Amino acid sequence: MEAIFQVQARLRQDLGLYKVKVIHNMKYKPDGLKSYVHLLNRFGFQPTKPGRYVHKYVLDPDFKWPSHSRRHSALVKRLDNGHAGEVAAADQQNDSMYLCEVSIGTPPQKVQLDFDTGSSDLWVRSRDLVSQAFHGGNAFSPSKSSTYKPQPDKAWMITYGDGSSASGDVGTDVVTIGGLAIQNQSIELAKHMSAQFSSGAGDGLLGLAFPKINTITTKGKHDPQPTPVVNMILQDDIPKDAELFTSCFYSSRDQGKESFYTFGWIDQDLVKSSGEEIAWAPVDNSEGFWMFPSETVTINGQKVHLHRNKAIADTGTTLALLSDQVCDALYEKIPGATYSEKYQGYLIPNTITADALPDFRVAVGGKEFAIQKEDLLFAPADDKNWYGGVQSRGQNPFDILGDTFLKSVYAIWDQGRNRFGAVPKIEKLQNTSAPPSQGEKQTAEGTDRAL
Image (cartoon, rainbow, N blue to C red; front, side):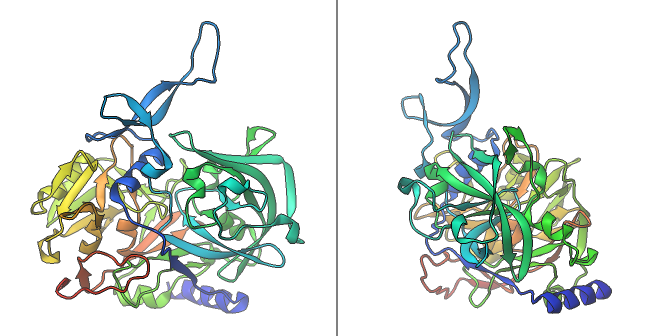
């Protein structure tokens, strides 16, 4: 790795690259059930545990043929009278826990975007957005950028299972991330947004998955465009050893720690402080995700084998979703843990201490990584319980390892070599108190436990 680090150090100096600071969104309010409903909506899987939210085939009222009707699967909410009701924006988490500053255009216009390795669109609020859907914040003005080029034949649209959507026009411009200028990047201008997309504090999203799942069309035909990282790779000034990005997340419980991304280089000090070599797993990008084998978990030293199981790493997901087999085995080891149909998830008593939580490890390729005990506790569900950070993936065919997992590792997303790498990043003290809200300072007397 030393030779690779030297190449990256030269690139960092030559291009003036720097860490992209992750901004903790102070308007974000963690809510376990709403986060789970958002994932049901986004990934479209059918839950296997009891709860109010399910996918159901419904008639399309706009499809009218004399002898035919068209049905589609939609996320619905079971009402008390047994009927299926609409899933509203208020039922799900539509805000981002983390945001990052990005510059678009010439001169640069600064926006705060959600970096998402589970999607491949770079969309941003447009100044042309209808005023009803614009709740303040920043927006990109194409007319104020001398390098913006409209692409009149292209359009984009993201749709979710509840019928919500965001859509608009497409152009290209220069995008600068962490000092790295990416030329001719497709920019998707949001002109129409449902409340599920417009109600968050951020200005848009920057997808870091693979181009296959980009939603851009040309004259109505699917025509996926390169993501910022793919365009970075295509530029002549980026050597093979720098065709990557990294992520480092800390919990809001962890005082004095700053989360960040890097583009084109790996933080050597963080790797060396782990005391371990980077463990690499081959990535299967055939579905557009950062997917790799994850065939074992270990709970308090007891290994569970998961034949041909796969997982994706997704910075756009807050929870970790695993199979029912794993969830049941994990929560059996947590004193007082129960499954709640009301919250459609596993709950943990809020009196629990770190030493009572199990050691839980998840495989990335051939190596298992521990999930921090504090991150097994996602957010308060009520005045007596936590909503667990690990929940059921239902009928989804793969695990989804979101921030619950990613906060325990320093992750290296090596797109050039099609592999995912990680080293452990476990805090010495595990804080099982509630995270601070809206800028509140953390006080954790009596809640920290050394590992």
